[in-house]
Length: 186
Image 1 (cartoon, rainbow, N blue to C red):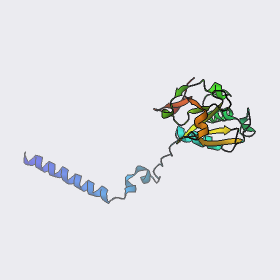
Image 2: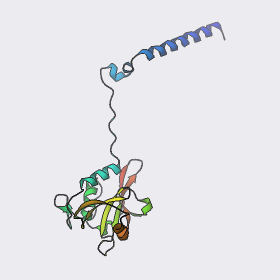
Image 3: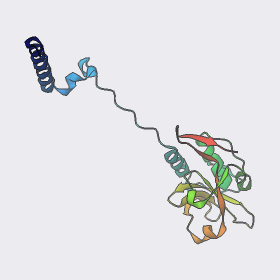
Image 4: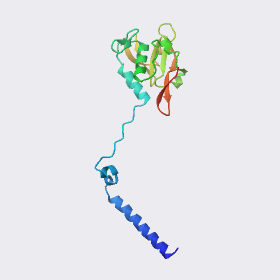
C-alpha cells in the first residue's frame, strides 16, 4: 500500500470518527427532521380493533336487552335470531334470516374443538333442531337472547343445560387472515 493510500485512509477514518462523535453530542430531537422544522414527530395511530374485539364489544352492547319473541330491535326487544341479525348488521356483514333454523343452513359446520369467536352456536330448546342460536365470544362463552331469563345474556357452553341441548356450530363469518376482513359464506 502506498503512502498516499495510507494518508487518504487516515483522513477518511478521522472524518468518520469526528462525525460519529459530533452526532453523539447532539440532542436526539435535532436528528429528527420534524423537530428541526418545529413540528413534533407524528404519533402512531392506535391499531384498529380486531374482528374478535369488535364482535365482543358489539355483543356486549346488547347485554340486558329485553327478550321479545320475534323481536328485532334493541329498543323493543330481541329474540335469539334477532340478536344475531343485529350484531351482524353492526359489524357490516350480510343480512341474516330471522330464524335460528334458517341461520343453521348458512356457512360451514365447525367441530367444537375448532370453534372461533364469531361462530354461531345452535341448540334444541323447544324439541326442534336448531331452535335457539347464540354467538361464540371465546373462553367457552356465548351471548344469546334467553327466553328463560327474558334478556340478552352470556352463558357457558359447559353448563349442563347447554351441553344437553347443543346442536352444533356454524361458521357464517370468518377471517381472511391476510386482511382481517370478514368473509361471508352461504
